[in-house]
Every structure is written in structure tokens, then in C-alpha cells.
Image (tube, rainbow, N blue to C red):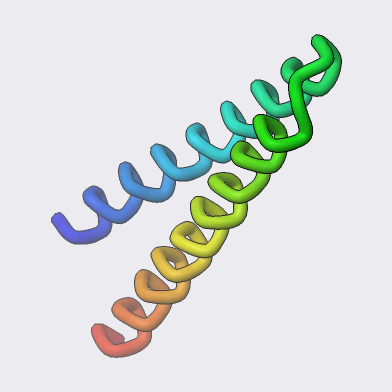
Length: 66
């Protein structure tokens, strides 16, 4: 059950990151302010860090279970 929850969380984080990249690029193309683009970049960095932590934690769980 934990694996399923982690898979969903990882999928959600990946989707969120992809969305942020796409929106950031659109904002840039449409002349958004630097602060708007930076806000998306900052959120993307937070999502990437959470994704890395989630994946790392999932790997740790598998090692402990083995």
C-alpha cells in the first residue's frame, strides 16, 4: 500500500513540476515580469526538492524492507 501511495505522490510531483516549467515558459514568451517568472522558478525548485526527498525516502524504505 505504501508503494502505491508513493507512486501517486511521485506522479503528482512530476506533473506539478512539468506544469510549472510549461507555465513559466509561456509567461516568459508573453512578456511576464521577472518576479512572476522567478516565482515559478522558486516553486519549481521546491517541488524538485520534495520530489528528491520523496524518491530518496522510497528508496530507503525498500532497502529497509529487503
